[in-house]
Amino acid sequence: MKILVTGADGLVGNAFRRISETYTEHEWIFATSSTCNLLIQPDVYHMLNVNRPDVVIHLAAKVGGLYMNIDNNLEMYKANVDINTNIIEGCVEYDIPKCFLCLSTCVFPDRSCDSFTEEDLHMGEPHDSNNGYAYAKRQAEILSRMHMKAGCATKFYCISPTNMYGPNDNFSIINGHVIPALIFKAYKIYTSESESSLPVIGSGNALRQFMYVDDLAEVIMRLISYDGPERHFIVAPNTEHSINQVAKMICKSMKIHDMLVHTPVQTEGQRRKFANANKLLSLPCMDDFQFTPVEEGIQKTVDWVKANGANMRH
Ligand code: GFB
Image 1 (cartoon, protein in one colour):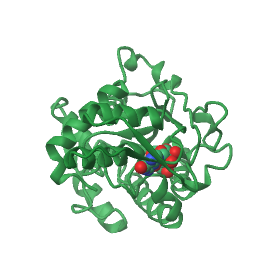
Image 2 (tube, protein in one colour):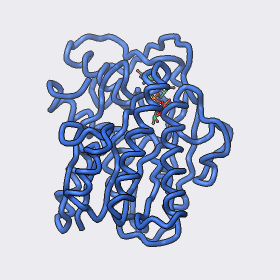
Image 3 (tube, helix red, strand yellow):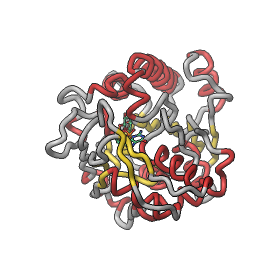
Image 4 (cartoon, helix red, strand yellow):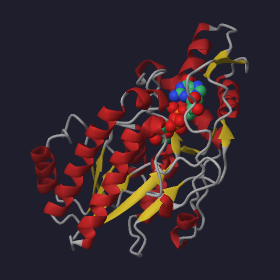
């Protein structure tokens, strides 16, 4: 198959560059912001028309952690609606057989009491800290579903991963997600050989399901030949960790003092957002699949940072 990956310079995009070395039977096209500006519709149409892939894995997005979203909800909404609409309309225009759209578990209704499944996607307001990003991702699910109802040739699948981390992440302390941000802070302590404590924003009691990014690439490759009736899959391990627990794991992996200092903050976002991935995990193609334990994923990421510290995005 000819597989076109958008957002190929990002966290998940680089995981597909790695996994392409295993899935050599496919022809891979890696699209980045420098090869195609997804905000410009004619450029997107040209890319799809020239390449005519069998599958589009659409990963590109304007994305960031809690504190980036809070201050940029309008931009996050507008940019992601435009990017997703151009890709979806382009796939329909050129009858691209399959397209995987990457959503996120943060787009689901803000319900920290119990868990949610794919069917809950539109059943309530998302958390206000990231409603721009959330509604833009929900729009992609709606637009693709309506095109399929209208009889387009493209089969669209929505993939909702939980919080991810790994090599090639955005390690920005301001815009990054919690694990890369904490790893960057720990790396600065490690390189300065100081005894300082690791700064954690807020109480650190929020709970999250964390997934090592290569696991998502493996899951999507297992779904690439899926031909069943389902169109939306949550991808998440059934385990939750508090921010304080992962902060301690980061200190251990970085071999620095595991003392944390908590900085007071306006909001810590959602206290919990437990996503139920049983629909995916019940598929035969997932029989022998194991998620990477968080301790192991964090160690791999810390080792990557120690080896690539100078070039990492931050
Ligand atoms: O990963 P994160 O930025 O995003 O934050 P969300 C997770 C939790 O970590 C919050 C706490 O409770 C933060 O208060 N935290 C502690 C920190 N220290 C830090 C730090 O140094 N940096 C950051 N960033 N957090 C995002 C959504 O929500 O989830 C995005 O805003 C995206 O749209 C992503 O979908 C998956 O998990 O709260």
